[in-house]
Length: 158
Image 1 (cartoon, rainbow, N blue to C red):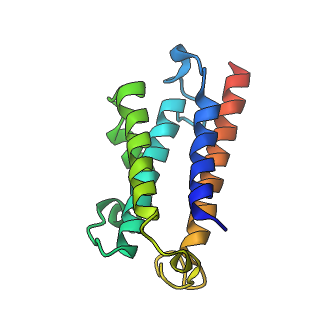
Image 2: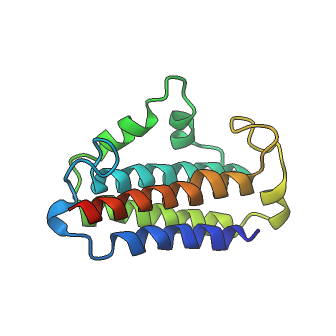
Image 3: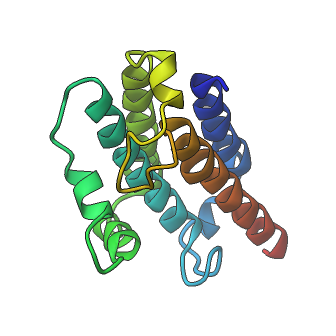
């Protein structure tokens, strides 16, 4: 697997899905439960921040505030992070954060040796049978595809 390609294609999928999305509908609830498309992008931005923290642990940086909140017991990360971004603008703040976090992810990912992506047991919080590759495919690529499909279906209902 080429982790860089998987990361790139996941990000491109989101952008292709939101391209031309009606400006007036960005904050309309119902794209994913009560979440709007803006909320979904805010959610994906927070996940991208988590991935930045995850990758930083592979290159010796160890401050992981997003990962710490993500792995906290209680499972409130998603709603808390979306709510933190509620008052932000769609294009200049939420989407910019998503893109900036992605750029940071890519700059960290190129610093990780390919064999590290495949090494199981490096992420105990995810499961000792899994590797960074697994996280990138399931928690990121698959996650972005799922939310992109929800956005596309929401656009069709509008």
